[in-house]
Length: 370
Image (cartoon, rainbow, N blue to C red; front, side):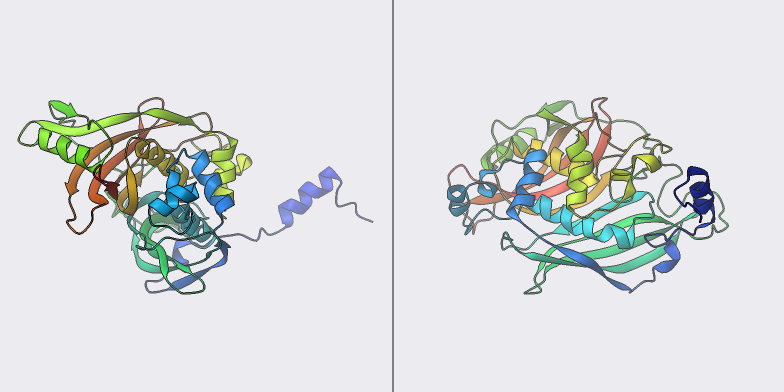
């Protein structure tokens, strides 16, 4: 009888066996298609606290009952960063497991009501558009609108639009020029935000003469800093002291806990031949870590949404994630005594001062007079 475990025999068997592949290619997506993602995920306080603790998000309202009640919550709710990461993680097997260049995510939005422990998350994605990349014949470009809903009530809990390059089954002829993704080159990275976003080179830096730092983290402090910079060659911009070095938990454990199956985060064998040479951090871990640094210097009341998110290069184990913030505008909602709305631009960067993530964020920031 054949011994299938004999090393020489087994190598021959592998050479002849067909691999049952995972994921979908560009040709599998058509505009208007709706994909329901299985198996879904139950959002738990255990998963929430694991995500938040590892990404240094320490807002007490998400940890302690008394702080939650003072914010108007029945109990510590699920944090929007964990909700976002879980919503995207569930989609990876169907949308981007084949790999490809992450081109951005925008219009990330949450409900006004809190999401609590035990909520069953159901996720579906609609194909918004498909396009040919004129610069990369082996890829096409797909945009999806993804919605995470409460499986019981149908309420939308998290929604966003993201765009990826997706491998084709067969390459197509191109003119070799600038693609519809707006780039000519990009390092290989994770399709779910662990790798490089294609970017266009600009003409060089043009920075303001003065950087203004808010004196505190309340809404009034951001208003005062913006007023100080007004009508001057100045910007309200500052960096945050904390850094978080990526380790086995942040690189592999956190994405797997959100059902993110992308090989970039857990398959060292495959990634050994990639530009990183190793597995890389899930983009939403990088993002949440940078936002955790930023939130430690502000009195966040509620997250509203995110736009124009990009991941500029991969982050791997041993890399350290820092954060830089620019305050764009502040708006006082006269109907709210608790908070005002502030729009930020956040940039995460590594130990070599290279940007790894950027995006705009809108949040309600607590008023000092509250």
